[in-house]
Amino acid sequence: GYEDNQFKPDQALTRAESVKIALAASKSPVLNNDTQTSTFTDIAPDHWANPFINYALQQQIIKGYEDNTFRPNQTVSRAEGIKILFNAFGIKPIDSKEKVFSDVAEDHWFFPYAQFLKSHNLWPTQQPLFEPNRSLTRAEMANLAYQLMLSNAAKTTPIIPLWASLLVILLWVATVYLSLPWWINIFPKRQKLAWLLAILTGPISSIIYCIIQLLPHIT
Image (cartoon, rainbow, N blue to C red; front, side, top):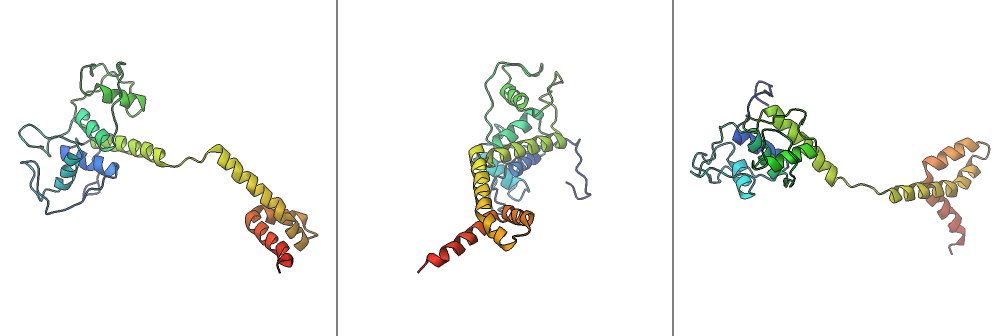
């Protein structure tokens, strides 16, 4: 946000801001080195966005203009901003001929990105127009970045297979029955308490029970 504690969601995003948000959302390892040189002629080495822009250029996330400028303060279009965000996350556009928005033709370079937006429900497709040249707002960029972060986290979160869950349950039940005689011996007149303790402390108490049973046989 800004120093006045505002986010300004409807404000248009600049090209420099879009690069920083994209890299931050994708958790790219950008080093803030003040001594690094600038690649573009319109960005000074001490420019706040220089580390982000240099990294994005090295990773082929962005490209400058033919005159070797980046124009960091220029507002970024929806199409440009989304492409930068997708590149930061390593997303490859899908190849499909299904038209999503009436103002994004099949020969438009943004067409495959529009397909990805629709197939992953990242943009409301009820509206016939996408307006790719319209300025991307801070709210739109933040929303897209958040959804991609959730999707990326879901891919990296390990999923426990069903058989492993069933195996854990079966082992727990086995340890409950194994430790139950021990608790019954301790509380012979309180069967419910013995069952409760066996269930809550099944693995631990079963190990202790086995050790106690084996002690007399150890010479």
